Image (cartoon, rainbow, N blue to C red; front, side):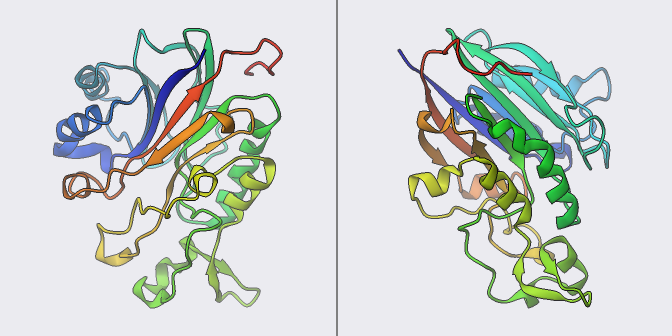
Length: 279
């Protein structure tokens, strides 16, 4: 017997500001079972009032993970009682990430799923690659793990930006491979993604052979470059459960944040006692 679970990731942009209720209503329409949020700024204030209000609008329960930088906290929500959180760790990288990476273990009618929620370093590809090194172990055989978040890196098969002049030179360090002389080559820096895929993680867009969707680039004139920054990568034991992925790209969605939600649908098989347990 299988159970269908819809998992999404979404960068709120500065905590959502006055947009947060509209964001919650938009996400409610996506019928998600698990949702990973990034940039939950100020959601820890006033007794976590905004986090609790957001979760209430969605009919979900929330877990909070404190960010090490810019108050860009993470929140992982799940639709209880259909999905139950049996363990939550707010920082499995022990303070070494620019932001953090949390780990939640879920069960749904005996079906198991572990979800990592993260926001990889935005300013430096080398730092992102180091952070990816903390995550490759979760692609080990037998682990039903989904890695979700704003990874600040393109997919390996995503198209290259043809004209880098559309991005100011002072921001190239965020995106491009640096040459020995300090200048930048023609390619954007995808080492973090390459490390994750080489370890065994699957990119749903590549696996399903669908056109590469944009999740960012439409908001700011400083970086008006349609690209995919938001991902949900699947460990090998979870990849066979993949049945679909989507990015709701509408005028409404583009008015709510500088990122769009990335969503995957999983048809989870019955948990196998022989699988490697979460740790």
